[in-house]
Image (cartoon, rainbow, N blue to C red; front, side):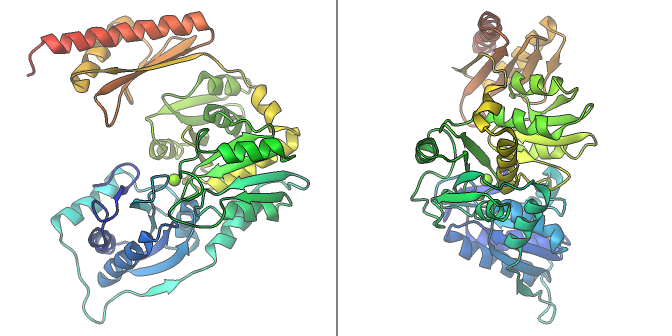
Length: 446
Ligand code: MG
């Protein structure tokens, strides 16, 4: 039921009021007595909030309804409102037809596997501790979280006087960003700022393809940078003053370099570019690699000396602030870096980038293929990481062989400091996968 991103799916199919009611009942039954509930801009969210609230209260828990708010605002609000858990009704960057439920701990961290499984098994067995007539929980309203989030950002980021920023909210819940930038003294123009869960302005996932309007506007005006969010405002990506989309690996490198001192570590997934290692090596810091997914990055960011965590999907985590990816905080921090340098384009262009090769190979049985790939690779190489797929560190480059989560394909990525080496590493990995696929064809299934 719960993936790493919580429950997510089509409204009226996988995601129903009945499910929200059950999750609410499960939370209160499992001892989460005070629960903060917020939602993104999807209209279907009002029904899900009502149902989930009824479930919590029916089992004796109290609900603080914070209305429409970015996911990081609600996640931070769990601690601010002294609650035991937070719930965001959101399908993040998915289309308007979807919705979902994501659960948060007081640290701002999404529920980990163990906590998710406790709630999931409670829902599956359908057993709850319903309260007596005089033991129902309460429902209250708190409208102060957005302002509190703006203040938290303004406290942590230098003034932006004279900076000109365009914010593409994507019709989502990320209004905190424009307010925080204004508070810091920047001039702000907005795109797609009207909240609308049908996402009429652009698809909710912010990337180079969906942000054509932002790139054009920033490039055609004297704006210093553009920033954009997904529907629930946990992700942030950017456009430089020339209107160029900033590759997400390079954003990761910029944030990481700014956060570290000598000896610190940065958490990032196994497919992160060498650009990040090199940006950190300059200052004596290093990357600690995680499985792909912001939940795993956040988990690693709880370790001492990890001062920043980044997922190139656009999720940026500063653990001393919150373990939730905070899109508005990331936007303000990037604006401050652009203001200090005088140009975001210069910051980006100063980073070294390397050739990267990618492909997907269709296979008959991806589990068997991955088993064979792993044993072949272990025979041939020493520096292996099997955390998520198989990653080989070649010293001057790396390859990653990883099964797709949804399709019958295995993906190969290779990166090195020059073209020839990247091509050689890529071809080597491709042959290993092709041979493993042939073998799995011949060998009978056990
Ligand atoms: Mg999101």
